[in-house]
Amino acid sequence: MRRAAVALFALASGALLLAACGEKPQTNAEGVKHDAVPWTGTGTQANTGTVFTAPGWKVGEKTAWEQQIKLRSNGQNEYTKEN
Amino acid sequence: MARMKFVCDSERCIECNGCVTACKNENEVPWGVNRRRVVTLNDGLPGEKSISVACMHCSDAPCMAVCPVQCFYRTDEGVVLHDKDVCIGCGYCSYACPFGAPQFPSQGTFGARGKMDKCTFCAGGPEANGSEAEFEKYGRNRLAEGKLPACAEMCSTKALLAGDGDVVADIFRTRVVHRGTGAEVWGWGTAYGSQQAGKPTTEGTK
Amino acid sequence: MFIEINPKVAAEKNIRNGERAWVHTPTGAKLNVQALVTERVGPDTVFMPFHFSGHWQGADLLAYYPKGAAPIVRGEAINTGTTYGYDSVTMMQETKTTVCNIEKA
Image 1 (cartoon, rainbow over the protein chains, first blue to last red):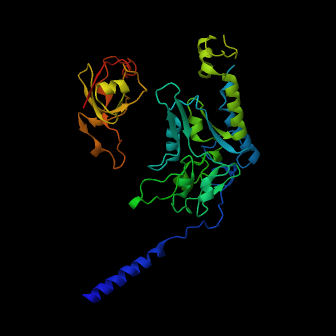
Image 2 (spheres, rainbow over the protein chains, first blue to last red):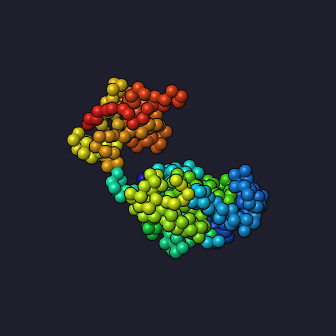
Image 3 (cartoon, each protein chain N blue to C red):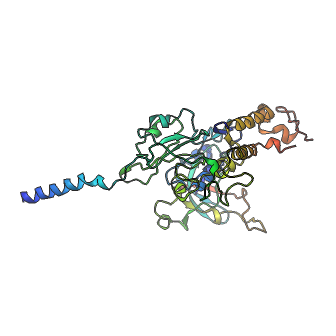
């Protein structure tokens, strides 16, 4: 009875101690956050867009993207539309 | 380009929750997380005010300051994002945030929190822009498509403005200057053409 | 499915926020819904939305929703309760015209 209890205890503690072996490391591979800038677009190729990309700006260009965002932000101003 | 900001005009917000629905739908937000919420004070009483609240993308973000694993980062546009692969679900950011923006999905076993989820200004996360992985984890990346966050674009009364901080501040200033004070804030003079309450607008009507 | 009731009316009928209420309409419908006591509606009006449900002919439909996806506030849909007016093109109900009686469930 005692041997069975010891064996069970050894098994249980072994399982517990080995539990973390299957876990992936929790740090980003590069260590620092690497996020693509927005103006490179959403296409699978670099600097391309998809059908969902807003028309009217050249994907990949920073200034073009900034202009597009400014334009769209100004679209929220209905005082420019009313007479 | 100035920082990206949200502004919610409490005079115009009608508590339609269009922004909430737009965000939840566009980003397929997990159950239990409400990235954007509408807060209403004095519901039904005179002086009722509503405001739409999500992550404010603070310039000095408390969430970023308290995170024990440094999973937050700020893009050049001022958008505060985080890496779900690094997040350990401790919940410190949730405690630190005065707006309640970092939230945890309600599906964990034994009350485990899981990965933190919050408003991303529709700018996704560290994964490749527009990729499947990015959509699964962070929701749609609208900024990379040249669009603004879904909530602001969906706002029925343009109460919620988003975008370049300078532009948004300008729009809001124009609006405040134009609409005057008192009942004219709701457009009384514009609608009824009377000077009874507030100044009617002189914008080429009547 | 809920009904928005003015606090004055709710006090008269002894209905508290979150309790169930019966709504009787001229069509003969008897709808069991949850009460939301709020100042949003005046003392002579109640408000119920459409496209909200959760009960069918008195039975709670909780078992039919996917697990965890059921609405928290369930009640009989308004469809049987609205009065006879309707739009001839869309067949949608005439809203904000139905007379009803509320009582505590």
